[in-house]
Image 1 (cartoon, rainbow, N blue to C red):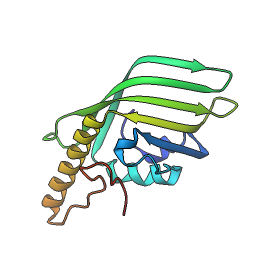
Image 2: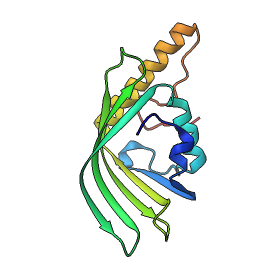
Image 3: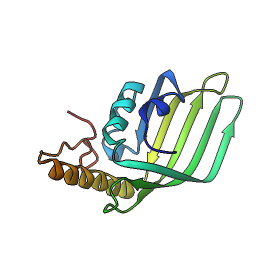
Length: 151
């Protein structure tokens, strides 16, 4: 996936798509990641990430019910050369529309330790950018991860 372009990400989702994050220990499993929420979140970090690669380790497909489960890992690349690459491990549970063209439901299980590391990298980038501009950083992602976009 080249970059984190919100509109490109949304283009793969049905208009009423809901994404959930798991496990509950993240503290955000009750948040509905609507298309607007996804757009706002990724717009806040699209200038930080340059790309992300995924390696699929296994998958389960249920054609009758338009579902696929993926176990995968990722490597995230940052625009700031001072910030090391990040990444994580995930299970994506995707439910598609009847034509298998758009995602209707998306449950994302995150590796909590790596997710925290990723948020620290994002926040470090925001700190560095704010320092260069002489402004106060706006943390979209809290290092505790449980307060993600809770404003």
